[in-house]
Length: 208
Image (tube, rainbow, N blue to C red; front, top):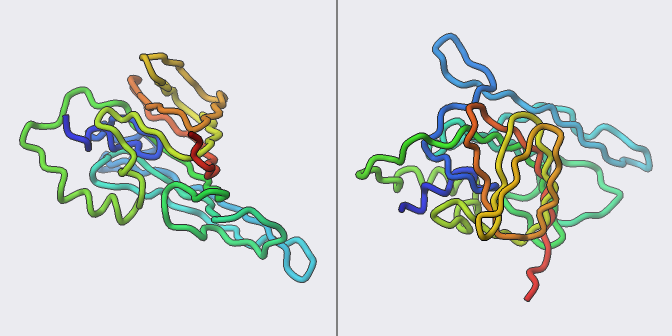
């Protein structure tokens, strides 16, 4: 099996490389149009609290994973206050130890069929690495993965299945919250609609 079959939700690891487009909206040509996310970041300037950022963020998409979107809302290498307030200050997909990232992730339904036998993902890999650096390296061929993070994941809309070792699974739907403690896991979307998840990741030291 190609490793890239498991690449797609990469932050979350669902094997959806050839999934149908997410139904965030469609234009007259039937193409998927995923919504922007409004982002407000506060800060402290001259001892006073201020709105440092109030803008909209478009999702990052890659050709390797049609229908998926990764909207990086916030990222910082260290947690400290006061700060003047910025939106994104780190590039890697996963935060370093002591860092935090906040991402809105859209995952389309799982593919109904495997990719063609002659499919070559090589041309798409450079784009994925450029736009989402660090997301692919920890992925196993089936989409299972382990990251040095504690993640708080809230399901905003749709449904998703969280799979752990030995095939243990839980179905999640809008309003459910998962605290992921650095475990080996995979995300599956066997349903007919995309899932949207709000993911807060904190970088932690790997235990022994």
